[in-house]
Image 1 (cartoon, rainbow, N blue to C red):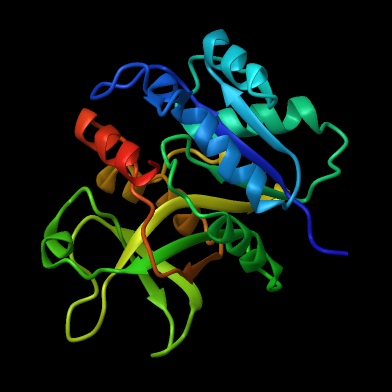
Image 2 (cartoon, rainbow, N blue to C red):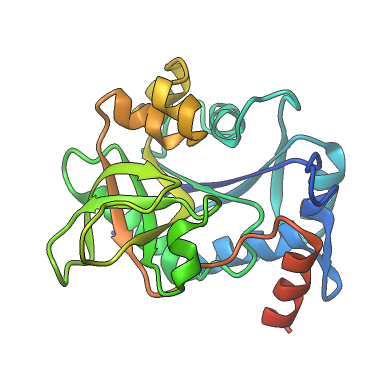
Length: 244
């Protein structure tokens, strides 16, 4: 029997650069519906959208999906995911939880499946993805988070040692662009949510550093393509072209 997970997509309307982002229209459907469809196509278990507002619930349910309304004041998507997990699976039937960002409409179903597969190795608490940086400007771009991975040449996965907004590590060799999808062992997610914000997390503004500071194991898998996130009107136009 293949491993199953509960896939949770956190979504909220508040966005500084693109207000109402989850409901942005892409070829007649809200962006959040496109993300939900990619998760359904991954076929690894039930998919749930964890919503900060009723408007998102209504859109997902109209598309035939399942959604739950959560506290609008959560400080992060991870907190929203954990509330939704506790709400729909209080018995703990699902040991694996996938946290898929609601602004990745071009995420490939195979990448979602790979995130779950990475949890299979014993001792892994959290899984995530990265892709090799090919554009020179991304090496110095602070908005492109780099994953520093303990991985031999030619490898496809390894332990994440650090995440940063600067070019790292130094010296010859590839740099890796972190992709914002996470797989959690259920106990690891519960532990992560209960931790106070880490010093490095606050300095770099990267939530995953909280897990590393607490000694948690993050396994990073390499994929060939970065699914671009939608943060601005220009990104939205690009998504419309990609999904035409």
